[in-house]
Length: 237
Image 1: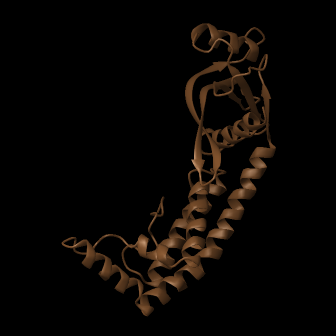
Image 2: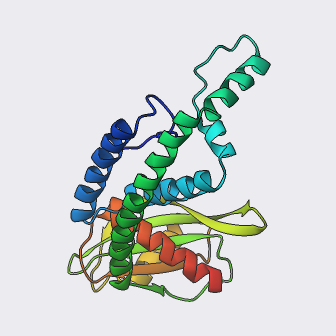
Image 3: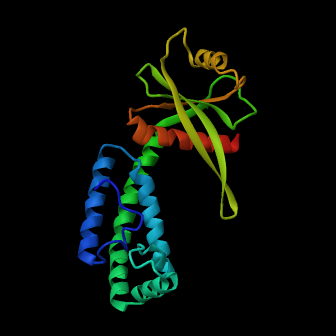
């Protein structure tokens, strides 16, 4: 099982043994991915599921919202009454609570393992500006390299800001432009100059280099870490 559905707790058969089997099969895939030092998408999924279960445990009304809409749609009022009957069923609720109590430490353990790997990967990476620092940080370029390889992956980034509750959060979108080989005549500064000539809409782009001391899977691990490092750097720039 490569994914655990958002409503895995309440969809289908609400049975402790069945949900336990479902969860352990999923976490086995997570473990295999982490063994390969492939963090994503599983690490972000674990964060979501763990937070979701805690919220459901603290607020039973969320269980009502999670039940799949599988009953008759003839009358919305009757539908709501039917769902409330399901949620108010003591046997069903006890089964759900048992599943949650089993699942929470399982998610927590996997999440701690993934977080440990993430922190290790991040500790092996360094971020630094390329050339003169720009005063405009909403768009620019991100170079990602893993020596001793000579190749550098070039990405164009764009910062997005969105509201979450009462705070503004930063997100970042990246698009791979090219992969180029570094050399004495093709330094990081020269690569940046070539990009300025090629893409004239960014005459003085914010440009950062992330270098990893060790080799990691690019898509599943290195890029998510590099993007997070870039967001942190831009937040204090």
